[in-house]
Image (cartoon, rainbow, N blue to C red; front, side, top):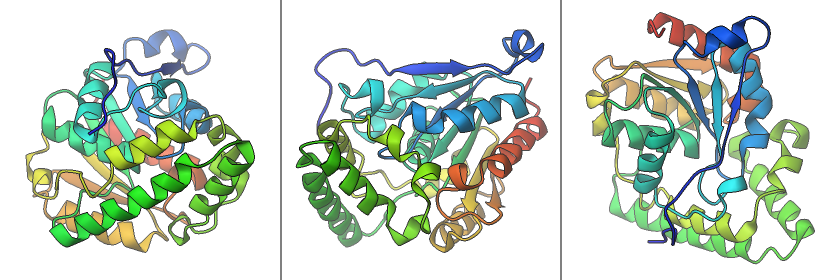
Length: 275
């Protein structure tokens, strides 16, 4: 398992609502947003600004290990969740894809650390050993391809291939934030892909019943795979986790339909009674 050589710190950036709400936002529960694989703060900053305006809360963006300003930090899912818990004490956490898996892991390891949790397209894990082994092998092969990217053109080609996965439903480069993703470094991302693979992630299906905070599972309306995962996960949560579909979106709901996603999260936080 890869780890950072020094005490780990994650790069963060705080977005504030505009106008008079800026001053009042300091008295409200903040929101922390975690991005997906190959993303970084810059990719999700437009979404974070929208979320800040709709929630009237401070929104803190985090560069996950191996990405953006946290490229020098390499940690597995558990250690990453522990580190995020230090960044987001008492906050509402929003996590997309990889960020959502970290959120689920954090809620399991630190049940009282968050005020609320919203995940978008997050896989709770693989229970079957054969599936886990196959996924880890596939992620290692993909990581090898990524690590071989020798320059910006190679990285652009890798990202084009990654975003061309049918799971994403054919998102345009500008919606995907391709240019912002190109600021990431291939080597650290490749290491994190293996360190956080579904093949080594803890099986969190049973943990749904133990979530202690208001929780929401979001998925794109056109994301059939994660719609099924969401239905199963929420059904097994004994009512602890709500489910909501983002109209018209596939897996990348947070980018394809940012207003609908942010509005749903804002309503969820209000209904949860967060100050």
